[in-house]
Length: 342
Ligand code: GTQ
Ligand code: FE2
Image 1 (cartoon, rainbow, N blue to C red):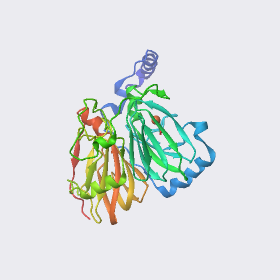
Image 2: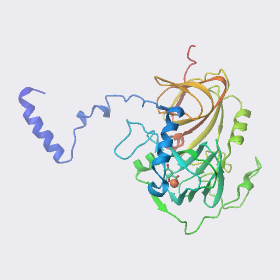
Image 3: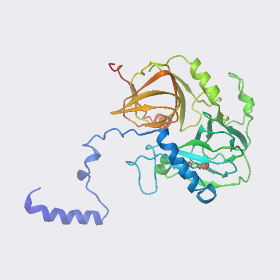
């Protein structure tokens, strides 16, 4: 702007701000700058595991309610509101023998993916599920849940929640237990025969009526799955009543990457978090290259081209994502690229 007008502009700028008005032309990000894809992050189990021991020594769920270490993206971190990706977060929860986490429920959908130990149970709407390595346990929004540990050694699991989405929408709410009354549920046995479904009229289909998927079943299904478009074998943890995702706003997959396979690069407008269950390999995510092994966690943020490679033998990755949210909003765009030259 011309020199002589600077003073006029500054006083106008002050007046706009005081009136809670801000000039759009000053916020370049609005239209002019195309935001770069968020940077992916990787946490190696070897680096994280000793830090878990410190949390075991220093805090107890009696004092802090939940002994959880959140995987945090510093770029998305606002004061006291850590998150892992824009829509989904991940944390490590540690429960020791004899400890328990009180019953409660909330609007947020949550999952547990067991990383280490056994002997703990999660109770979901009154159904009790043992927690063993590689198992996925769902606690969908508004389902009552609690964790109890009657085993002999610490259990460590990954908590995955869509709380960043709920915070953004203003729908994050919580209710402490005990439950005044539990909803009617259908026993899991009623869903144990593939292709046959109980007809009770009571199932509301908002989420899977079965809250646990054991690792042995998921792994067997992945191994039996044909190779998909990108070269990996993928299975979805499905709602048996619909064949759709286990929860309306969270999608979960187990991926088997056969030894030597490099998956076709793909990118999405949605975000995902990846947990290595078995095997070793390398993932290219945008400009980053992650060399991973069992129990590592890494993010697959929107817009990044992603390609995975297993080394030595087949690798198994558990991947959960917010793609259902984008799909429901008509904002899901997934693209496959060309195989990169090796
Ligand atoms: O275990 O129910 O990491 O309610 C965050 C909120 C775990 C849980 C978290 C929760 C839980
Ligand atoms: Fe919870």
